Length: 311
Ligand code: NAP
Image 1 (cartoon, helix red, strand yellow):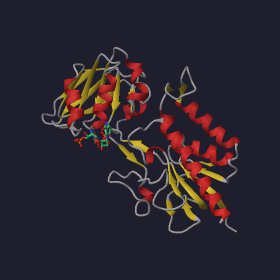
Image 2 (tube, helix red, strand yellow):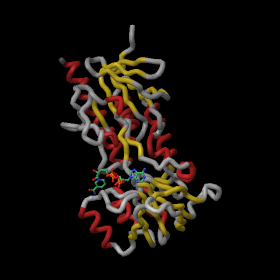
Image 3 (cartoon, helix red, strand yellow):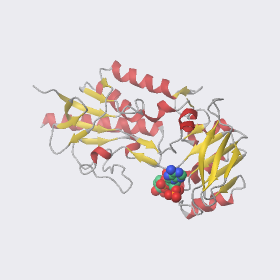
Image 4 (cartoon, helix red, strand yellow):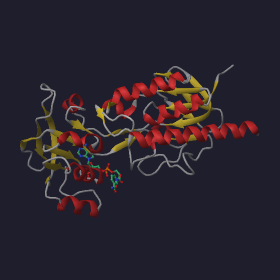
């Protein structure tokens, strides 16, 4: 006899774990497939100061471990695996991992979005130590310092403008000579005396992993190939996000950027399949908003199953 879970949650970031806390506490048989980035993006950050309830802040990995334990406390089962294929044509839904297949009555997709990275070794080593993917989260640590923002889209402009509240100087490094950002964001950034632009330039390396902190970046002008170095204390990457929705393509409705389209709360186009967190939200992208949408998805799952039971 195959085992049928009442709910399977894909992803173990703030959205997935909050959903699990709610569904497990509601006595629903809950399985979490933790995914590739266990603990989600918060497990990659250091101090989280804007998650309510922690006046002194809390380390990202610790916050996620707490959520994990809270979900387990109510009986949610966690498996360190990622879904590789899903079949959502009929219920129970079929979810495949590398060596196992699972079935569920309802599914919550909380697979998040991954920050697009430059792909440098130094960037990996210094992430959380001067390299950041979130100005809202980390801007505060750069009071009166010099920071660079990489990217030319709306996120890069938004991050730069936000950083001017703290930093002494913000350099925007863009690989072309025109911004992709909307006119209004461009104008705001151009007007801000703390923001300067370096055009047609890419980041070749970030210094200094040996010291465990950011001291400078190495740049290359793409038109002349000339190399240069710029001293800075922080590097903010704002070159876009990639929603983790590849395995749902063709089954779940996605927008042109690949984010899941929701209607009526956290419902997707398939009855019984819900989504929460950054996998559908490219606007707020905060731990607390992800947790909130995980809660909403869990309550909607609970109500659907109850209604089906009543017949
Ligand atoms: P985006 O629009 O895709 O912009 C990414 C930027 O990063 C582009 O300028 C791109 O350069 C650059 N880039 C990409 N890969 C790179 C690489 N490997 N090396 C160097 N540069 C690289 O992403 P986004 O800014 O995150 O915005 C995503 C969506 O959210 C957009 O629709 C945006 O309008 C929306 N958004 C809106 C707001 C707002 O309205 N307040 C705020 C944030 C986001 P190229 O230009 O050369 O391609």
